[in-house]
Image (cartoon, rainbow, N blue to C red; front, side):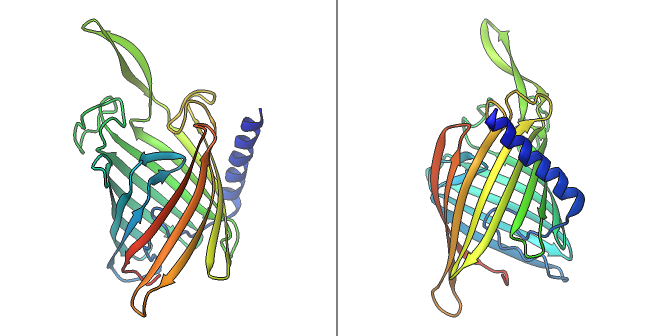
Length: 277
């Protein structure tokens, strides 16, 4: 009951915030350095090293991970790609991003494609352009990020999986063997409330995220086998000045996934930054 009450509180906060406030959050993905304030067409990128790849309570890569964001920015629009690869050679992901940003709110449509073996019920990747929900490894995500105050201390994010491998399953017997077969979309919903502040040379963030399925409020969803709080944590970021031309932002995040009963400590470093941020 406590978990359901917490999740309901997150949902209500999200609905109220979207009806009253607008936002601007410049991040395309975690640790992105895209500058959406530019009015001319330009190219931007960032390159990061992470001790593990952590995503909304999930761990796509258990090994150290290299990730790159690169894209074209024009006025309020960003067209970009994300690439991630694990140093153990197992994790590999490519994402395509379309983002539209207003002063205090942005809208993001993102297509994720994960090549990692064993990460889904489909053992062998069927191809980047396989859009059959029965066999694809892709996921289409629609996300909205909103700032709840002018100083952007309070932020809220809503993400809905619209298409892809986020489906329910049923057992079927094929050639004498029982296999899992995908059925209808679950339309998994993720909501996250975040508070950020600065102290001395650090930026701190605290966040709380919950998830559920729009087709079955008590059933399994993409982030867990039941609805609930799946992402609680805090992070601290400090920028180390190497010289006048080189600065290294280092971020440490302590996170917990109550649904999976797991906790992680993640360290990430932005190795290359070509933006003005």
